[in-house]
Length: 290
Image (cartoon, rainbow, N blue to C red; front, side):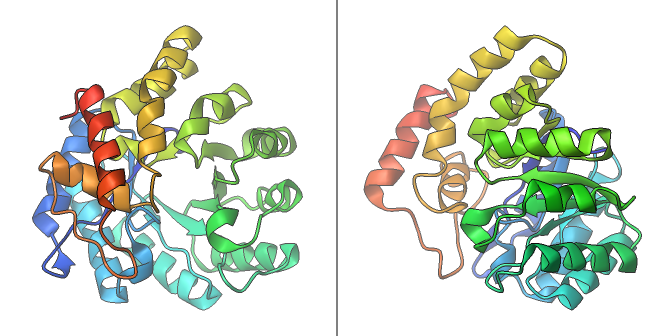
C-alpha cells in the first residue's frame, strides 16, 4: 500500500511557533520533486515536543496541502496506548491515508505488551497502520516473531524497520511475506534492505535530496541495480552527514543553509556544533545542493 521514497518531513518553527507557510512550501517542493509520500509528526518532525494542538494542526495542514496527490502517513505513536489511539483517531478524521506508530518508548514493554498495544490501536481505529521499530530511540526491539503476529491484523499494512539490522529486515520479509510491506528506517540501508525485500524507505535524506532518493528506490524496483547502487554511493556522504548529531538537528541546519526554513529547534535539541556544521556544509557543496 505504501511504497517508494516517503519523506519524514521536518516541522519548521519560527519564533517558537509552527511556520505553516514554510511547511506548506516544503510539501509542495517534495511533491514536485517526486517524493512518493509525506510523513508528518515523526521523529524528524519533532513530534516529542509538539503539543496535541500543534500535532493536530501539522497533520491537518499536511493533508490539506497534499490534497490526495500522494499518501500522507501521520505519525501518531505514543508510549501511552490511549494517547496513541486518540492521535490516530484524529488522523483518520482529518483524512490521513495511514498512521505511523512508534513502539512505546521508556516503558520498555515486553513482546506481548507490544502486540497488545498495536492490536488495541488497530481495533480502535479503522485506518492502515505502519509499525515503527527503532530500538536506539525507544529502548525496545520489536522482534520479527511479534511483527509476524501483528501482520495477521488486516489494517496493519507495513513496518518502518529501523533496527539497523538487514538480517532482521530479511527475517520480517521471510515471516510476513506479502502481508506486510517493509520500509527501511535507515537511509543508508535502503538499498541492502530492498535487496532482501523491502519496498522503499521513510527517509530523512529526502528532505534535502528528494529526487535522488525517489530515483534510488525506483531504480532498484525496476531492476536497475547498477543505477540504484550509483545513487546509493552518491548519497552516502549525506546519509552520514545528516546523523553527525541527533536527528533532526543536521537536516534542519541543512534546510536552513538552503534557505527553505529557519533552522529553529525546540529544547532539549539545540543548534549544531560549529565543527559538525562545517562538515555538513561541505557535503552539501560537494553534492551541489549549495
